Length: 153
Image (cartoon, rainbow, N blue to C red; front, side):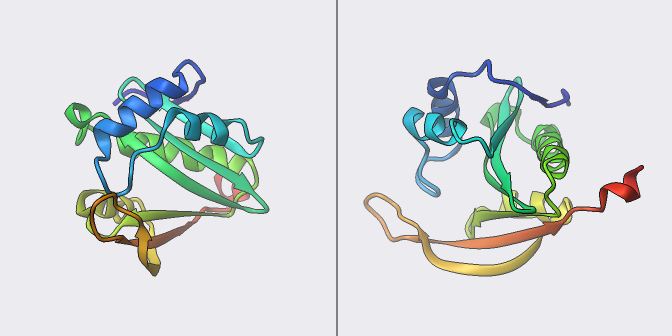
């Protein structure tokens, strides 16, 4: 798969369009304004690949992967795995010792990816994702400890 890179060439509108293609209801897709607001925060960062991106933030020794999106036609090609790895490396460079994320309990493919990458279930949040016109969906909180930077030297 292509190597992810920190990049700001994708507009908030393009991110929102891709996000809509990846998430229909759970979690609800983000708007262009939501992407712009998150990316304006100094703790936020994003990694892009031609068919996807990983967006999150790092502060106070922890990182949160806010969203991972890979175009439906490009899934199962290692892009998501590469984006998460790039996100983790950037989080570690920002001083994070652990990464947290939320994933819809019903999203078995994403949960399997995260488990394969070393994430473990750390909790469940009932009704976390509001679904327009339907019941709220549960989220699984997952966590991964990052290796000490000294171990990688």
